[in-house]
Structure formats: structure tokens, C-alpha cells
Amino acid sequence: MTTRAVPPADTAFFPLDEQLQLPPTALLPHAHQSLVRLGTHLPFGQAAKEVQALLGIRISEASVRRCTLQAGQIAEAIQSEQAHPEAARPRFPLPAAPVVEQMAMGSDGGMVPLRGGIWGEVKMAVFAQVNPSTAKTEQHSYFARLADASIFADLASAEVTRRGIAQARQVCAIQDGAEWLQGFVDGHRHDAVRILDFAHAAHYLGQVAEQGQQQGYHVPARWLNVVLHELKHAGPERIMRHLQWWKRARPLPAVTDALRYFGKRLAQMNYPQFQAQGWPIGSGMVESANKVVMQARLKGAGMHWEPGNVNPMLALRGEMCNERWEESWQYQQRWRNDHHHGQRQQRSLQRRARCAQELRALILHICLRLPSSTFAPQPSSRKGRTEGQKRWGRQTFSHRMLQDGSAKK
Image (cartoon, rainbow, N blue to C red; front, side, top):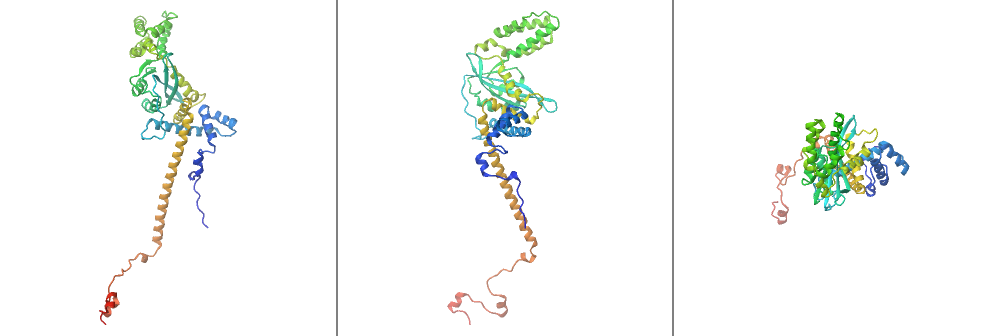
């Protein structure tokens, strides 16, 4: 009696799984989605406890981590595909961008702890609609990645397109003046009104006051408030002349740094004009984005992340904070179905190739076991006189000649 080998469990397929959209886990769809949502909000160990408390499902911390990061990898792949819509009909299309009068965009970087005691810079972009009557931003959306500046700018193009930055009539870019931020603005909206974050400018002036006091110079208690009021309501001209006087009378490294930094960004410090146009002058939306999207989940006590796990978690955090979780989850289901369908097709092709190879081997095996005479060429049956007729001189007659009676007797 012969036994057949049973295929591995991961190669089996039950058609009802696809029809019911069951995840590749032991959980039902609602439990699976709830687990991933909790893993996106909370540390994995705490999320496992919440799953047991809310759903009555006992699951390990490792399982929560695995399911959450797998969902994050799919979300990251979908967002990357949306940033490069090469197909005429993309699988995950972006909705039509609205036309808005004024939009604001901001970018910044934040550090996240990685394994090995090192830190990585997570780049953050935030987009918002501007209310010109109050100069405040609303309807914020975020995009974050652990990547260098060029790759980040490329991947963020999907969110830029979705928020209609190119279609907006006016756009301002509020930032701290770093060089890579200028390149980000150039690539997506080169004509944007560029505004140096007022808090960043105040930081340089605060360092001047602090170093002056440390060196024993007389710095009035209200000096910083006065110069900041002057900068906000009158512009940077008088502040620059005042810093030049400081450089001559009280040479300090902070004064030199402020002059060099402000000198390259005077056009971005025209705060009275920006406020008159209804633009915000502070990058509070970027600072809050770093806290809400990245720090709230990735900078907990004792956390150290593998570099490959940062972007999947940031992809999930972005969808959660952008209030697009349901849309993202539907796209993830479609991605899983397409991926499983492609795997089944690949396994089918592999089985066909394997069967063809086994058939060829079987035929070769049979041929080698047969005697060589089996494959010897057989004499061909040719028409005409046989060997006996040739030997005895008999003559052959055709059927027509016999009927005509013309054959010799």
C-alpha cells in the first residue's frame, strides 16, 4: 500500500476564505482589525491586555506585534504605490483634490530611538487649510517617514496630491529654514510663501540674551520681549541693526550665529506682511504633528525600534491621525486578496512545471527499461512485387487488370 504526501498547510486554499475575506490568522475580521487598531494606539503588551479585556481573546504580545507590523507593511506599500501611480487605472486611487483658497504646509524632523543605542530622524510633513480671518490652520493631515530628504519628498507626493497643494490658489510654507526643507517646498510648490517659524527666530534672540547675561553684560529684563514685539510688528530691519551694534559692542557667539542665520532668511521674516495676508507665522501645527503622530507611540519609556519597523508603524499612525482608517483597511483587504491570488497563480504554475518535469522523467525511465530492439527501425512495407514473386518470377496484377481480363494466364 502506497501513501501520498500531504502538501504543507500554507499551500492549501479554501475558496470560502476569500469570499468571507478572512485574514491569514486565527482571528475573525473584526477581532483582527481591533487588534491592529489597539497595536497602533498602545504598546504591544498593553494592547494584548486590552484585547483580552474587550474581546475575551487571549493573545501574546508577540502576536500583537506581528499582526500590527504586517498591517503596517501593507499600509506602507499602498501609500508608496499611491505616490507612484504608474498604471493608467491604479489599484488604490486617490480622491479628487478640492480647490482651496489658502493652504499651509510645514515640515520638520524628530528623533526616534533605534536598536543599538542610536537615533534616527523621522521627517514629518503636515498640510492644513488656512482660515484667513483668524490666521489659524484647520483640517490637518500628516505624513511621516524614516528616510532621507529626497526619498521623503518623493513618498510625500501622494499626500500633497490628496490635499490639493498644486491646485490651491495660495500656499504658505512654515518651517525652521533648514536646507532640506527648502528643497521639499521647491519640489512640491516652488511659488509658496516661505515663512520662518517665529518661535525659531525667537530662540536665536533668546540665546543672545542668555549669553549676554552669562558674560556679565547689562541686559534689561524686558529686552527679549521688546525685540520680539518689534520683530513681529515691524519686521527684521531694526533687529538686524541692533544685532550689528551688539556684535561691535558685545561680541558673543550667539550674536554672530543670529546674524548669519537671519541674514540668509530676511525675506522669510516679514511677519507684518504675512499677518496682513492672513498667514500664520508659527509652526505649531508641525510641532503638534510630531507629538501626535510620532512621539505618542514611538517614544514611550524604554522603547527602542528596529529600523525596519518604524515606517510600518508610521504608516498606520498616519492613517489613524488622518481619520482614514476605514478606507485604509479596505485597501489593505484588497491588497491581501490580490497578493493571495498572485501566490495561488504562482503555485499553480509551479505545480504544472513540476508535473511536466515528473512526466518527462517517467517517460525517460520507461524508455531506459525497454529492450533496445523495441526502438529498432522496422522495415517499411513498400508496394510492388514481394520477395517470393521476385524469386519465382510471378507477376502481380492490379485489381483493375483482373476485372478487364487483360492479365496473362
